[in-house]
Amino acid sequence: MHAIRQRSEAAKVRRTFYSISLLIVIVVFIVFTTSHFTSLKRQNDESFKRLEELMVTMTKVYLKDTVSRTLADIDLERKMIRLDLQVAAGDAEAESRADELVKARSIVRIRETRLIEDGYLWASELLTPAGGRDYARRIAHGRYPDSEGTLLSTEASSGLNASQYREELDGLLADGEVYYTYYTPKNGEPLPSRMLVYAALYPDFSWIVATGVYIDDIERTILLERKIAEADLEANAASSITTLVLALLAVLGLVIAVDQATARVIAASYERITATEKALRVEKARVEEAYSMMKELAERDELTGLRNRRSGANRLALENARSSRSSAPFCVAIGDIDHFKAFNDLHGHETGDLVLKHVAGAVERSVRMEDMAARWGGEEFLILLSGDSLPAALEASDRIRKAVSAEAVTVGTERLHISMTIGVAEFAKGEPIDELIARADAAMYKGKAAGRDIVVAAPPPRARS
Image 1: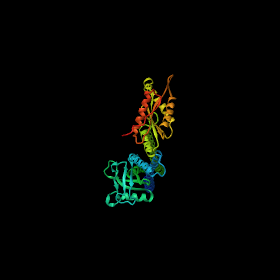
Image 2 (image 1 turned 120 degrees about the vertical axis):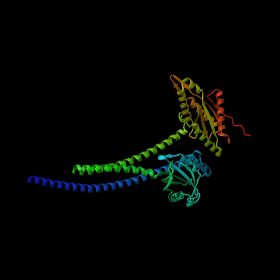
Image 3 (image 1 turned 60 degrees about the vertical axis):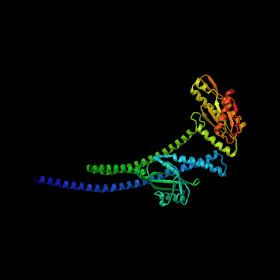
Image 4 (image 1 turned 180 degrees about the horizontal axis):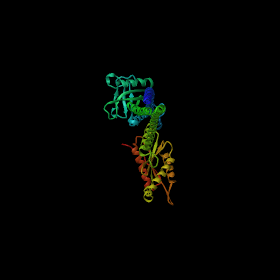
């Protein structure tokens, strides 16, 4: 009985010891876990604070790059147009006309530019640097084109956006650029959201060019990352408690595991941010590549690589303006491939396409840098001979004719020779471009009737009554 009582007392002491030990372990674990996870949460919060600052910085860089690229495009456009129009340095009137053309094209580009996340650009013309009522006029807006022409004001009595315009103007006058925030509705949403805006001044035109992103889009990304991290932390905490109940020795391993898991969460968050930044860069490159491709497709004929009809017509308009201003001569030649229908009918359209490519190559190799060759339609080509009077243009057109005649296409064992008939007309002051082309076209048809493979000069236009 005594032995039983001793064993019972020993068991009671052991239970008490184990209970106290377990209680101590639990208390120590709770204190340690609480302290540890409080520290982890603080580190996590600090990491997300840095993440938020990084995303804001990245966003600002993206906004500034977008506006800076737009201003650089305007500068490039000015140089190209002045080069095309041959604007002399110091010729204020010519420079003004060239700048008006640049402004018109730039307004269209700003209005039609689309950025990631439904982004857009807008621009205003600064009328009064001191601010006040009607200090600026909206000239382009990528989302609200109906607002173009609206006069803006920094006076508080003029509306809710006055303080925004005042902040923008003060920053631009001080530094030439400014970041600021204001509230504006998202597309299709009735309530306004806060937008981060970057604006820069283009002083040569007194233009303010700006773009922005909605801040809640940035906050939404950060919130998602925070929820993922917090969920991972909660799961790891539950696993730690379960492991401690099962075995004291697992506490150390669990703490290490939690540390590693937390590190993985933070690392994963940074990886997602890096992936987002990379995606932004890829999207930017795609937009720039698409813009270059669209510009090339808009100006070039897909088959021959020459200018297309629209691009050629634009070049003729510039030449007309240059000639009208300087009285410099120029001529237009219309060339048509002889018996082209026979190439298609007898040998197929692939042979016809090959003939067109050979002719286009011969024409392009035969013209000067200041001249222009375009596929005008079907088998017809238009050549602008800049600065040439009729005799020089006839000589140049005959070189082109001979270059085409030297071309041949091999189909099977048959060698097909190519020739072209060309009509040439010299521009008469005040003559519409359509009539100039019609005279060259008529001369070309005279050459067809006369036996083909020749160059025919068009007579001068009839005097206007």
